[in-house]
Length: 275
Image 1 (cartoon, helix red, strand yellow):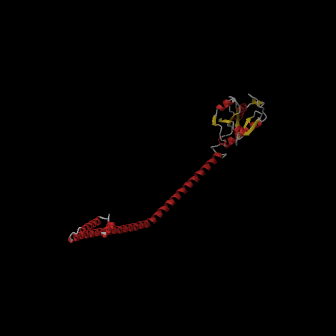
Image 2: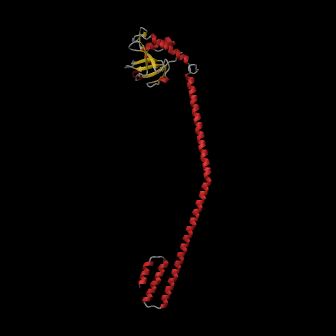
Image 3: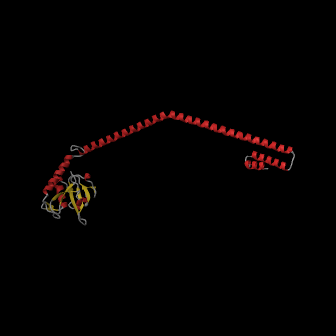
């Protein structure tokens, strides 16, 4: 009885074969307790032994199959690794060659781009030189010098003229009368008498923030210095930011447009075509 309990505790809940063996042992124990014939006991043990041997055979086949599967898998993995290594070793020189060629192509493209950029810069500098050349056909430097010369002469001749509203003579004039006479005497160009009309006609070049690089000699600069419709002051641009105007304190003065007072009051720039 003790042997049965120990055997039951060890092999219970195992495979079907073991359960069959337990069943045979249980039958044998019952037969022993019931004082059955020896033939039945021997038969039961024989059946159990047969079942146990079958289980052992099945377990052996299962172990053999698992062992063969693992060995086959290891062989396949080793073969795959060898193939990949061989392929990699064969492709590495070609990849290195392709990479070197791509680097060389990029360097060639960059060099070509740098050459094109340098060529464009050189062409831009040459074109700027042509534009600013005194003997250029695109920009008549002699005409500009002539205009500046006449304007500076006019400034000298009006240097002591007192300011007089409505005046157009050197004995007394206002800003718009001064501009009208200067253009008439220097360029034979008839301008309107009133500042508003002078500002309304001609070609508009810019407004409050017109850069000096866009200005040319004889451009008219209009400033908001007073109130109402007639609160404008006009001056004649010279060069390098300088312009001349007939000051309300008297005399034709040369001042620079970068001066805070004039810079904040600039409203419009007008250009008249000088014949």
